[in-house]
Image (cartoon, rainbow, N blue to C red; front, side, top):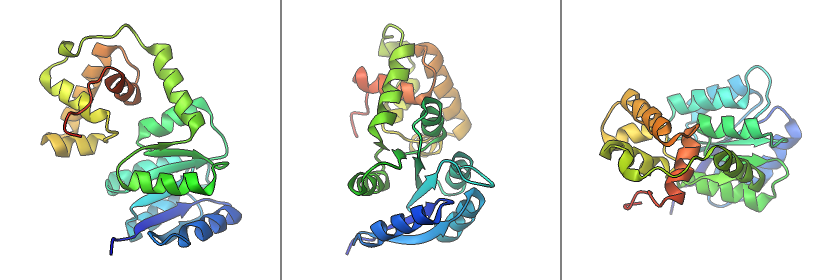
Length: 217
């Protein structure tokens, strides 16, 4: 029997936590392993339970969801994080994705979308609310310069760009390529400079649009 997806939820509103608890515990392929009431509590309980997926409210007391997510991912790189919010502010979306969120959902999402997002990020895929996806595409198009040929990149930079299109973090890239995280960071910075892009999310969109994705994925 397949292992259940271990889920942590963090939200400072009891009603939100209770609603998420009911939905998740009804799923035969999911297990709720912890509930947290703020960002600091989320980090502590993630370290204690090592969830597969963490659902984090963006705005929480003591420490916000982005800070909690970064600390969780630093300690638990295999934990995928989904940011939940009542808002869909352009800056918040870009900051969350840039910080490493594998999912970004508005709290108006229905149960099917939420459960689908949990399953998707547990497989290593991304899951974005339609409004968040539009923000990313608009940001990309607004700053996009005329396409630069793939051969403007070194072979290693091209390989990093291909892997960026899969949504991999710098730590995951380093493990795949057998190099240090610092080396990956340097390659990503060079890619952004050469392609005149603002962030790794735009680089991933560039790779997909120009069919520079990993041929082995």
